Length: 157
Image (cartoon, rainbow, N blue to C red; front, side, top):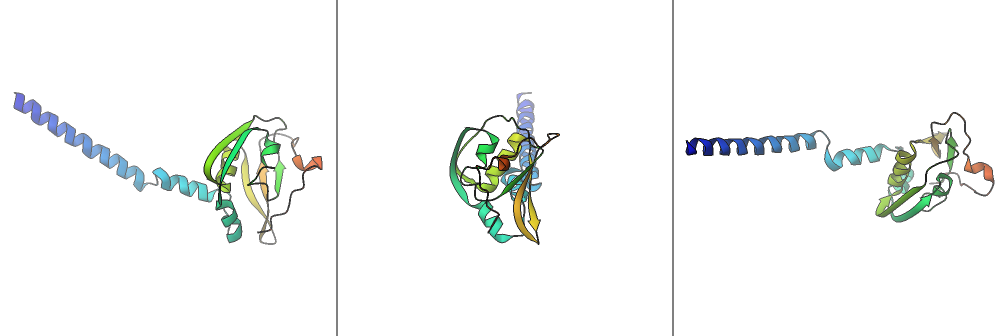
C-alpha cells in the first residue's frame, strides 16, 4: 500500500514538472517574456527613418518627479524634437519616473500609457516631422505650444 502511494506521488510530481516545463516553453514560444515586451517597445513610434530610431533607442538615466504633462515634454532627453498635441486634457495627473537605463522610446511609451495617449510619427514629404500626441478629450484645451514660452524644434535627425 505504501509503495503504491509512493509510486503515485512520484508520477504526480513528474507530471507536474512536465506540465510546468510545457507551460514555460509554450509561453516563450509564443513571444512571452522579454521578447514580447521588446517587440511591443520596438513597434511604439515605429519609423523607417534610421536616424529617428537611433535617437529613440538611445538610453539615459532619468528622474522626473511629479511633473505635469506640459513640463514632461520640456525635459531632457525627450525635449529635442517637436510634438503636436490633439485632444489632450488641460488638467492632468502628475507623472513620476526614475530609471537608471531607459530609452527615449520607453520614456515616451510610459508617458503614453500613464496618460492614455496615442503617439505616432507624422511625416512630411516622406520624412519624420513631429510626434503627434493624441488624447481622448473632446476639445483640444491643452496645447503647450500656444504659450509662446516654449520653442519646439522640428525633428532634424
